[in-house]
Amino acid sequence: MPDEMSEKVVEILSAKECETVVRNALKLSSDESTKLLSYALEKGSNELVGFMGEYFKLRVQIADEQSPEGTRELCCFVKSVPVSNELQRAECERKNFFRKEICAYTAILPNIQKYATTKLSAECYYTRSDLLVLEDLFAAHLGYRHLASDEPYTSRHIKLFLTHLAQLHAGSIAWEEKEGINIGKQFGDSLFELVLIAENEWYVTGAKGIIYLAKNYRKFQTPEKQSLINDKLFALLMDMQKYTEPSTTSRNVYLHRDSWDRNIFFKFNTQHQPTACCIVDFQQSRYAQPGLDILFFLYGQTTASERKLHMKEYIEHYFSELQARFKELELPADIITKAELLEDIRRAHLPALVNMAITKPLTMMPDGLSNKWRAEEQEKFDYYMNTQRDEFFQRIMEMDPTYESKIMWPIEELIEHLIQNPDLCQ
Figure 1 (cartoon, rainbow, N blue to C red):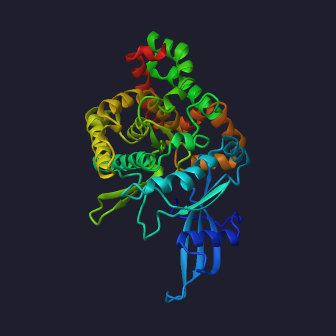
Figure 2 (tube, rainbow, N blue to C red):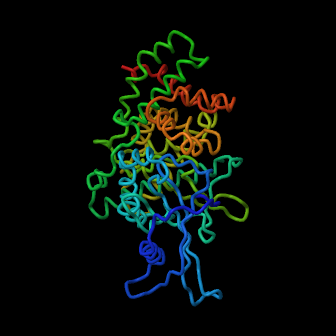
């Protein structure tokens, strides 16, 4: 959700659709009227990395007799299948990214929100099969923003977000318990695995990228590690989907599962301390045990040394917040026990490391490079994403000498985890 906008773009929303957006945003009844004076769609900032879509801001001028100017402006965030990149658009449509997210915003999140005491996600005002119109979290009256590049995640940020996950997870259980539904069964057609599956060429390309980076990494030039990398790693990576499936013995919850920093928004008090957070982008959402959500976040926003010192504390915090929500919602405390959570966390370590090893090289690209290559080298960038990344890594390493050090830590942790747990490679 960019706060700086660039040039005007071709219209992808009609005036009638904009009126629907306004009516939904203002929660107008059928007998209440409104008058649109003008609307404009502006392309999002080039700083926003859009791997699964293209981003715009919609500004609508509405007649308002209560305003001194006689008008008011409604600003919304628009997420569309790519309109300027045919290859990326075809990929989004082929993989049904938007079907999953439309279901999340229209059918799942509003019901979970009923059982939460904090705002979980941006409100959705309008959907089509190829786009969503959401409230703009950057709007002044909402007051959310991303952390700046020089603002580190502190323990306060981390615990606040883990509390947010506990609200999401407990809310999903409350919805099931109090309204007699099963999220996994009712929305199974939309809660499919998109990422960690052998049928996804993007994932297979990422897996081959892990092997390429690991094979050539100076710290891995030992017979034991080279044997693991060359003989066992690819087969292991092609078997990740089993870690993402719903449990048949323990409680499952609704998962966001894509909590990198651009999908997390914080609100701050006058002392610049974070007081609330909100999440966007549910294209990777699933129905499974909570460990995947917890570790995908912690591996994405903490260092190895931080996790060594504070992992137990963070997991304790999440569990305490989850139990507090269960009590407030009058749910049994043992719906998820401490022992079940710890076993779930243990099992989730491997897919969390694999996810980070594949995504970190993409999220750590130099600012604006993804959008630049997508615009100027469409076919080559599609090749990098869905066929082979060797040249991709080489080009960025030549541009940024620090790139390798930024992207290798999850691969280092992955290899060490597999050496310490050889049964995982059997």
